[in-house]
Length: 389
Image (cartoon, rainbow, N blue to C red; front, side, top):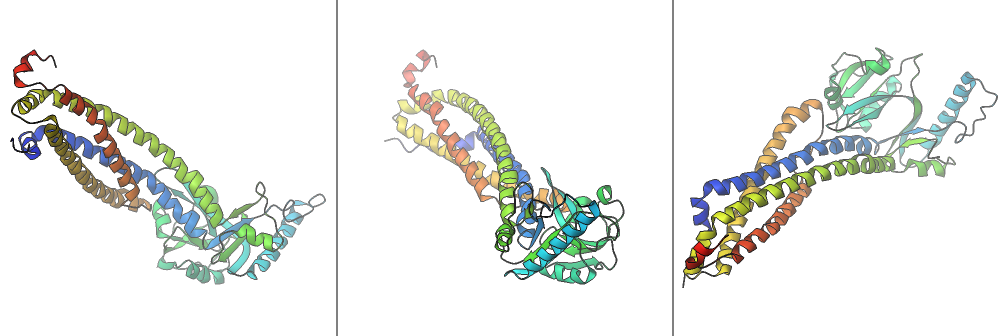
């Protein structure tokens, strides 16, 4: 009875051919993984804003006429601004009495831009009196790392990641394009999220809103409804955890998923075509070898098992090497590109690895077609010369 066919002997004697398949599959792994890794930096970075910030601070901007009920028919602009501010201050005082609310005030806010690998987003930087600054920083678990706290109008502190992302320097001006040279960065914070705060500039009008510091409140609209204020979707803006979850899913995750799906499908199709063509050529070259095995007593099943062991070894090595290279490349990209830009990332992505593993399984299944056809074409050694394979 013939001995069991050794897959490793073929692999050792045909390292070049095996290496081509292994390298192709490994590069596919690396390309897919790094593509999804780079696109995911947008999600990981924006998640700090729309979930991290909104979990601690909510910003409420209500329409004066439709929501607050201000009669603007016989009001001048100055009168409307005064009445609108009075209504918002009264509402802020009501919110302070609500369970879970640590503090609330009506004040000015400015916006800081964060630019990710794909897309941009702004977050609110609240402006308040000097006395409130330490309280706000403590609530966000932010510590002063460089410089000092704001003491005069127009001074702000900003977290280190926002500083890196925008290229700001300590002592420089904040967002000169929108705010000219009215806001100066006097301190750098160490913080788990993108965050900043400061003191407003007297006589310089920016957007005003109710700022709420709360704990455990995810739906601020429900809280407002409880005190008699019904938020109207097309008129009012409530930036809270509920809004953040919806925004993250629809505007970030779903958009990135569509992009990655197209890229992923294109990579898989190209790999499938090239891999099938190359592997079919290899099978043609092994036709005489298999005919010889069949002539000396090996069955088609024996040959098929040997081929499958060869493929499993190749795919296994490609999976392992591709994973190692991808993780090392992701660490390199993080340290050389993302960290200097103040962006967040997640090195290990189990979901992406699972998707790649499923793709490998699919490719292995497709390769059964040329293997089965090649086995069907096997002839005994005396019939090889008559075979027109």
